[in-house]
Image 1 (cartoon, helix red, strand yellow):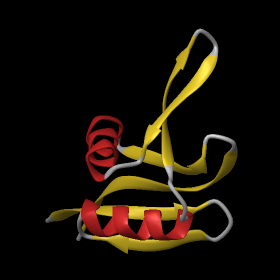
Image 2 (cartoon, helix red, strand yellow; image 1 turned 90 degrees about the vertical axis):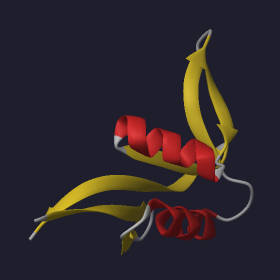
Image 3 (cartoon, one colour; image 1 turned 135 degrees about the vertical axis):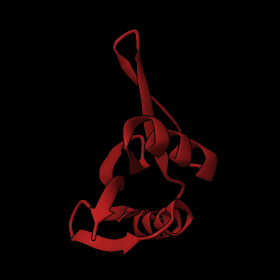
Image 4 (cartoon, one colour; image 1 turned 30 degrees about the horizontal axis):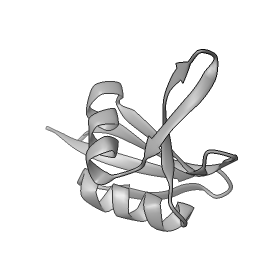
Length: 89
């Protein structure tokens, strides 16, 4: 049997939680980062483009990439990551 889990990792504290759904992982990551967090989207003419780290944007990144990186702000690399993993048991 297998189950999808979401691991939240903080830039300074390592693993800060393992969750069974992405909503709980999102809440923990946003709480860890604080402020008005953003996620990196793309490079536009050599400059980084960030968007608001809304629940919908996080879910989209996790489903398409297997992870989402959340930053405190565009100018601060402190943040958290949510990674989707399959737990086999």
